Length: 135
Image 1 (cartoon, rainbow, N blue to C red):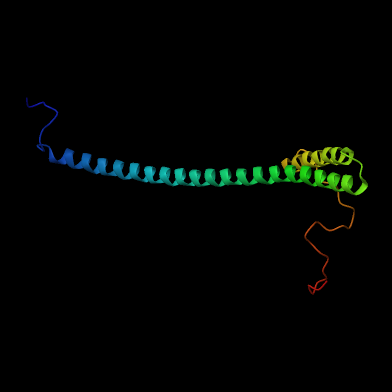
Image 2 (cartoon, rainbow, N blue to C red):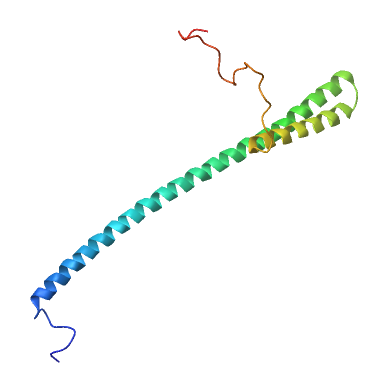
């Protein structure tokens, strides 16, 4: 029985070293767990941001598509009323609106390039200013 695995503190020096080693291992594992928690929280935050970004992109694309159809149908309906041409204007402009909506969706998704600007033309939302800041 003297060779049992539990010696109830009879060998104090070996017990002290093992306690120090265990404390060091415990601290190292706690640091690794803290690092893992921080990484998981960052990943969850990035995932939630990308989800909302995807929803925003989907709403933008669907509204552009629907707007193209509604505007085309509206123009066709007004022309039919004004020129008394029956459903022909509505059908033609509804198809044109559908085509414009599909083109807007493809541009938003990046499958079709934006129209090229002419040389010297400024991008949308900018204006030519001199060095003093006046136009």
